[in-house]
Length: 250
Image 1 (cartoon, rainbow, N blue to C red):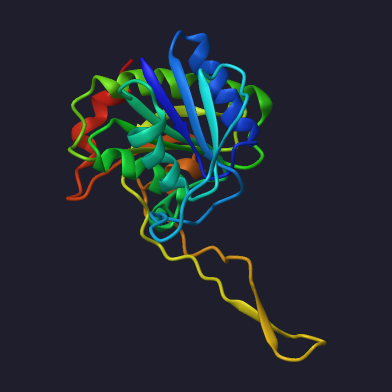
Image 2 (image 1 turned 180 degrees about the vertical axis):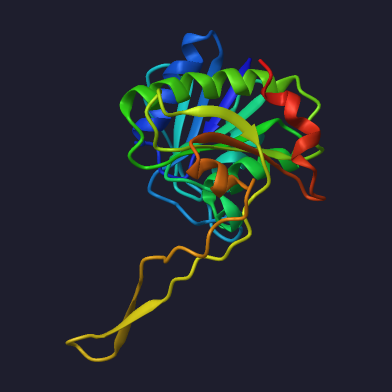
């Protein structure tokens, strides 16, 4: 299978390199198009009025790899429209260091890059893991992601839907079975700290987010808190996750 890997953490992300090696080890032809620099929280933005430079990159397991001076969605678009030599059969965005759950899925560059592929009717996954996941769990999850991608490529998923996958920071003994679930709609609160520049004028730092009230039972945040890997189909018209429970039967 021809797989395009993209992300928002950048071409040097260790998790991207692990995923590339895993996919190649299973016999897939892998092309990588990843941002040259960190591009988190870029949502679905892409470049319109300026050129986008690309640079060839050497990555173990990749047939070709490119560092893109643009957004995660730029990476997907360039990969599908210009850089991949053969028709792409699956796009995996990630693996992101840090969760992309709840309403954060709407601002995530990881999800945005996968969504662009879904808009072009290419099977697409956005994959993230919690910070602090043990090494054994990370390596299991990388290989499991490739297996799930193989499943997605032939599965009748909702039209133009992204499969959003997240891993909790649990040991293998504590990790519970993957579940299909809707996103949590609780709102995280943050703000800005105002400071005065010694050269005159004000500037602002984004403050850390504060957790909202307890997550709605059965949603992605709730299931992750209980130790499950979570999967959610994010579709333009929405969908009932329970209708696709058999997706995880493999």
